[in-house]
Length: 317
Ligand code: TXA
Ligand code: MG
Image (cartoon, rainbow, N blue to C red; front, side):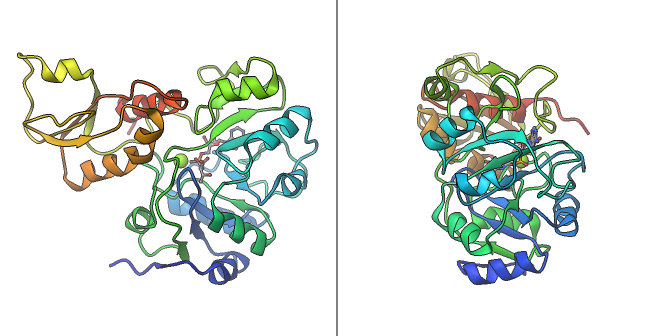
């Protein structure tokens, strides 16, 4: 039985945050599991509830670029440009932190990952709370991120104070993370494309997704449903000699016979919006195998392909 309180009351959510309790909140990307970013005790509850290793730093959410400046040593020219172009929005910037954030929230690092989410309820919550909300995605560690309040309640049961219900997430994959402590470096592809950032910055963002500098917690297996994922081309599924295994599902641009079939748009934006809900449905249906045909175009295709690759990666137990 899920006893979690779910609703749209900002006042109630603020009360919980001020009391050091956890509040799940909507953003345009995925739902976050929020705590007062200045409180070591509140932040510790996030790691405990998610089963997340304590050295994986959290993103701090704030209401505006002006508020972001209060948490960092320097908000430089690159940060200014990116904030102006993409905030509120699905872009997280890694900057040198000052003393405001609880060091537990940033995994003991000297940097802070910060963003202004583009969701009316999240912005109202941040303004009323008046501080920063540390928040990872509101799912169990390594699993699929939630894109609705129902997903959060299903994952985290009755162990959190309040779920602020803001409907379905409009982007559907997590924010892009860019490290601005040196040459602008991409740590995680997401809801803002590298091309769009290159244009705004007038330079080429360095790809840091594979090297040593990649974001901690960006492991190979992540965003993983229980079913075994196989990334395929549609032609493979439609080939004469293709044998559909028992208890399989297919995610493709058209209906595929002989399996539980989800149809998805070809463009990455539409695809991203529906992807995590489909991965969860595959789990509810207890499918053994899920064949996934990736999207073929769109600005955020890198982010979708990244999540699919991680969902398909061998599981680390
Ligand atoms: O869209 C999103 O970003 C969502 C919503 C809720 O805002 N949040 C999210 O949080 O995806 P999470 O915790 O699931 O992923 C945050 C990523 C982790 O890979 C973490 O290692 C990285 O951000 N990160 C956080 N602080 C960092 C830092 N100081 N330096 C480098 N990476 C950092
Ligand atoms: Mg996550």
